[in-house]
Length: 170
Image (cartoon, rainbow, N blue to C red; front, side):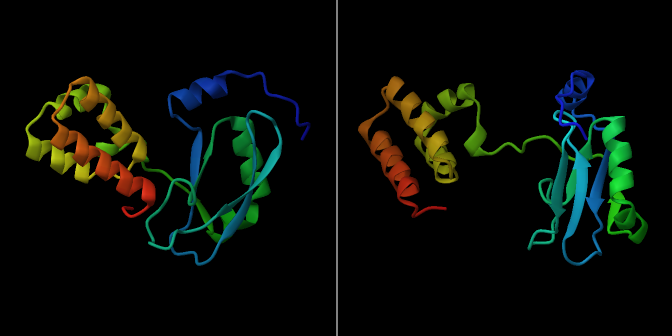
């Protein structure tokens, strides 16, 4: 391939709508890893990707699947990986993949965090204890300072942040 930048912005539009032309996955019963080749829709360069099953056995978007965003990329993929397709090492994925981000205390919006810092103590404590992200705790601490929460609350938040920063909580 040429390595010339692709000027076709329809690929960008399809990616923004999360609507790939095709999705292939490493076959669930296939042991080991599968090395595939794909054409990058943006740079027109050939990329080598390693598909494998994670240790827990659950299909992972980053390790088990490859999304194809243009017809040119799809044709190249089928030609370059013909042996894997014929042997069943990689298969077309036909059901809809989950792309929504699961809501957790770590990714609460600011409006909910502002409500949380003025909520009753036990509710605040329960949610903060389930947080594992330093960034999320820093945001809670900032909103608590702005709301002028009691020293007991501020001390709890700082201690929790300290534990996460030190690596004692993972």
